[in-house]
Length: 184
Image: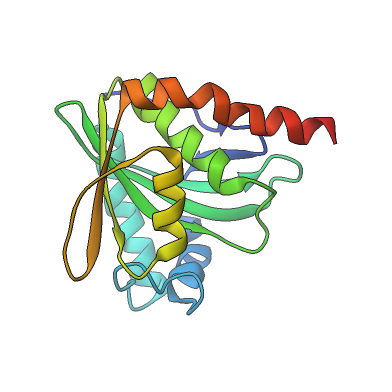
């Protein structure tokens, strides 16, 4: 079992572990036509979402899954969610990724860098495997630009993998984006 620091700092965002009192915020994101359209169907109510979070906390306690609220570093405001799950045998999956309109510049890149650093660095995983809804063209393009390798597809999803070594080779150039932003 691996206890993660809480919060975990990125460039412009931080992750903190989800709490049951985040249920209303998460339910709002997941039921929003704009934000939830590429995710599995959400819980029917914030009470059901809260119960799901309470059950998830047991999986978190044994290191099988981590669910994060994404917050802005400048003011601490929530701006999204992201899950790290199916952690086993050196592999992990990440998803349920939503960034709202309150996100800072480059929040997608920052959150992806941070989730890979947690999984590859802190947890010692060697491979990410994940899927993206085929109609979610913006997220597909993001993962392809990030260096994820497409491993297959079906009528609903496109499947990807990213190895720890590939991430380690790409991360320094991706971090430079934030150095350039800081100069402005």
